[in-house]
Image 1: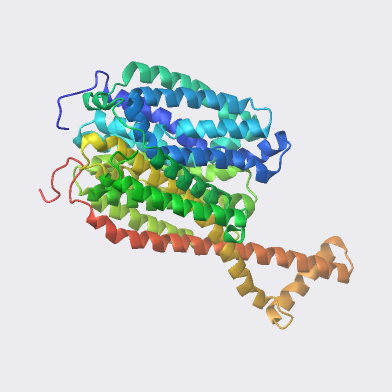
Image 2: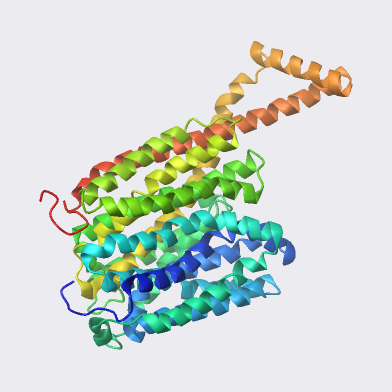
Length: 520
């Protein structure tokens, strides 16, 4: 850093404090998912209505992410960060004591609005607190919040709702928020260049409006598309059109207005642009697979919410153990090589997951997820370090806002694409397998009669009824096999996607984490 300024408090303590706030917020994006059936039951609402408690949060969160740098300039970064933590904590408490679905949705909107300022400011605080040669190690702490929290969310949420009440999913944030607020007041401070920017900004009403329309409609479309059958729904089609118009309008406006709410020209920095692309690719796989694996475990293998979450937990532990090792490798190996290795390993891990079968056991499922987690550990810290490598410190807030926005929006896209792909491939696989369920298929007829005989021997049912029972059981097997094959196909598509990303990783600057040229 080209400045003699250093924070008064220990930088590592600051990193832990601000990361705790981000962890709390990231956890809330996934911890609520498994609690939705319980919320619907308590609020006397349908499951579809209850999902608006998740959609409302994601919409508000997505809108604020890119304009968080603007609020940091107006209010001062520390003050804005502190306001976000306090308000997020209060809204969490209000969500936990809500008496009807309307109240819950309103408080979730506010929770998402204030939560959206936590991740970008956490990143920019770390950027300003540490010199470039220490950022890799600092981002290893940040990785715990960004990478591990989405994985732990379903596990923790399932355990809380199974053993206590869904309300504790929200109330859990209160003590964490109180402790974090006190710590931020005590240890975090704005550097001189941030204090000079405070209040010196004009309000870009048009930019804010276009971003709100574009990203808000995009999040609604992504979150509700699967339930409403995508573009066959006028509701989803309308939001898709508004999303395109809003985002396109925002890009044009922000590039040409004199005082934009977020400085898009910071993406002229090659490393930041490549970093945003790499983190978006990584987030699509991370969030998509974090949904696919528990969904497979619960819907096809009959796991409870807690047990399905536990499939992810060993991988989360592996990431936590691996990240410090990757951080130690970064000063010795070109960082872009680590990123390339991460995507290669992720490709291999997803091809391994492609081999899953309907009778897969718990240990094998854990190994598949853990192999994906092993690759994920290679990606977050190196990508984040490279992204901010050549960004001027005055633009750290804008860069952090855009980097976080790319990651979160891509995560939402990954979830939507993965679930839609499962549905489409299941239908395709069922169409293919149906050719084998023909009266002219000798194998099918032999299996049907053997199953009917077994049913008669076990239950004593007459032959005609036993034949109906056998047909029903074979149909269940047919659907199950088609669905598992669909998951296998989607894992293969993800592997191909990772392989296509690898060549782009070599466009990053050839440097090591210390900032020295890779060849030196």
